[in-house]
Length: 249
Image 1 (cartoon, one colour):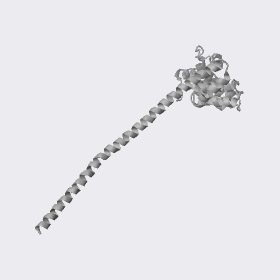
Image 2 (cartoon, helix red, strand yellow; image 1 turned 60 degrees about the horizontal axis):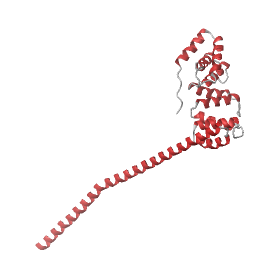
Image 3 (cartoon, one colour; image 1 turned 135 degrees about the vertical axis):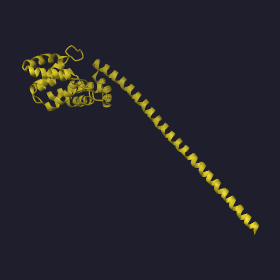
Image 4 (cartoon, rainbow, N blue to C red; image 1 turned 90 degrees about the vertical axis):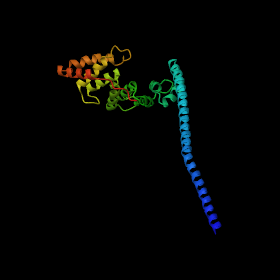
C-alpha cells in the first residue's frame, strides 16, 4: 500500500514537473514573441524606406530628364525649329512644368510649329495660371478680355488680372486699373483705378516689368486729373499700405 502511495506521489511530482516545464516553455515563447513582432516591424519599415528612396531617386532622374528636355526644347524654339520644340516641351508641360506650359501656350497662340489654336493656347496658359504664375494669369485675363477663341468675359478677365496684380505684375495692375476706371467687370471706382495705375507706374524703371508700366504712368496722371484731392489721398493711402501677395504654392 505504501509502495502504491509512493508511486502515486512520484507520478504527481513528475506530472507537476512536466507542467512546470511546459509553462516555462510557453513563457519563453511569450518572451520571444515581442522580439519577433519587432523584427517584422523593422523589416516593414526598412521596406518602406527603401521604396521611398527608390521613388526619390526615380523622381530625381525624371527631373534631370525634364530639365534636359526643356533646355533642348527652348534651344529648338529659339532656333525656329518649332516642331521639335513642341515635341520636347509638350510632355514636360503635361507633367506640370510651368515654363513649358507657358511656351507651349505661346506656340499654340502664335501658330508656331502647329496650327494656331486659341482654345489649346488657353488650356496651357490656364494650367500655368492655376499654379500661380502671374504672367500666365495676366495672359489668361487678356484672352478673356479680347475674346481670343472664347466669348469675351470681363468678369473672368478681372479675376485673372486681380490674381496677377496682387503678385505685383505691372501689366495686370495697369489692366486692372483700366477695368476699374471703365467699370468693366467691376463697379466703376476711380480710387481703385488710381491705386493700380500707381502701383504699375512705380515699376516703370523695372526692366523686368516693361509691359504695362509705361502706359500706367499716363493712365495714373489722367485718372488723377479727374479726381478730387480726397479721392487722391485715399488712393495714395492704399498704395502705401499695399504689399504683394506671395504666389500660391
